[in-house]
Length: 171
Image (cartoon, rainbow, N blue to C red):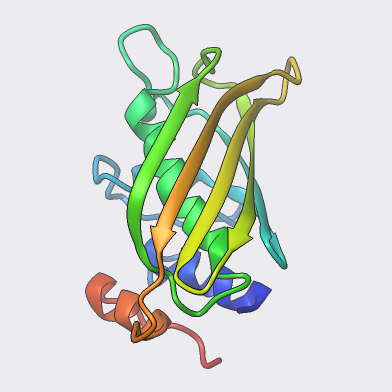
């Protein structure tokens, strides 16, 4: 519904009760969970229908070839596209379909930019798009499409916070 709502959604997913490091990232000490990819996000920005961020690919999210694991990319598509949706809707929905195209590898230590957009927001269906760009080369590395069902009776961010055990800032 707003940029602030989207950032609160992502902060709840990043367990914001954790202490902040000097560089602004969170000291979570729980890498290895499915959402560990979110822990290294920086320069998070939200505007109506758009969410962007950057991160450096950590070794903990790499496959045996030393590049960002496809599962980590899938998590980025899932969670961050929902963050983009939160800029326009209080109903965050449930996934109907997530499709990801892996175009080129993103090596460990490389900076990556993520751009998420709301393509279409209907009464009960939302279509979202995510692009991962290699900063060094400017190449599109992966793109994802996320289709979500928006239940008309769904509760707001509070439901996410209960599940994650986080307490959001007042709206």
